Length: 119
Image (cartoon, rainbow, N blue to C red):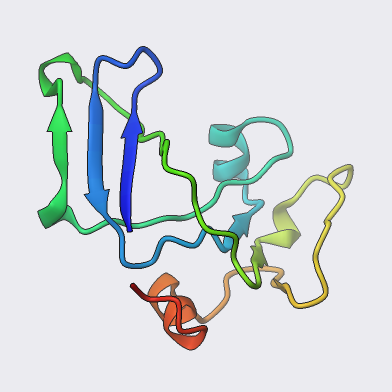
């Protein structure tokens, strides 16, 4: 899948090929909560560096990617680092979601391969 993204002001745009595009990880660790805000979580995506194209690179300094492409709905999700979540955050796991107090053993690529979702 081709992911497209941009900075908030739109001066920098990028696209990158992503063989594992499903946002399946919901991480509640303190780093993800601080960067995502509040009691929320972050999703984990990856891209192939050799496919990265950046437009407006002269406008970058420190940049954190924002994906604009509509992502596919994962058939199951992984909720991780639940030992780190604040007590006031409710977990809304679906029936087939996997919950972990810390990190799961399965990688991003392994999760996609197990569910035949690698593109």
